[in-house]
Image 1: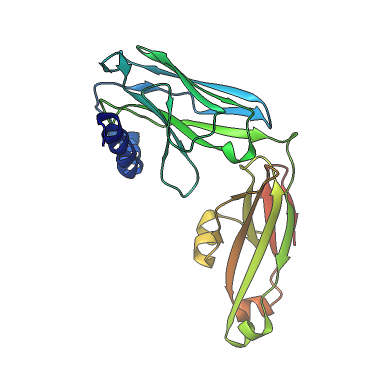
Image 2: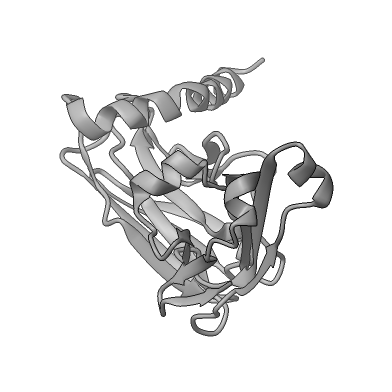
Length: 243
């Protein structure tokens, strides 16, 4: 195994602890290099986007190589190494991802953006593994805001016989990903009530067409359901709802 192979392996292993480090950084970062990252960027499907990374001081250089890496993280997944040594693609990374830069200014460019590229991206000084703070959330636009279709599924008769009532709302193919579902019972949709009723929302799934689908579940006692309590699912953005 060459020295470079060993270093790449170490870089990849760093991703296993990046999630924990990233979480801790939100409140107590005291590292020697900090990274300025703007928060969110967007691109049309098939477009090109450039993400700029600026560090508080020049990153470490070894044998004329800048020790800076780029990572991609999707919901519920560990960070994935995209670029190491500022401009070298990791194994298996598509050619549409390119890195460049030196000293304290670096860029990640994604050409021909695909729906699957929607994720959080962040750069990190490899000499200071705890240098990354936050990241850029890339939203891939597919032609404007699209209201997801809502379908509410009532509890089954078998479940009602067991004294329980589970309602499920399916949100299908919406864009962007920040639509929010909430249940209303007797006209109330407070967060405290949502917790008491056992409302749960599943993570969003990115479809191949660049839109998002997900579901939300509400659990009620069967006797409350039998009282024909008004129950609706509200989709926040334009405040539409489906009962």
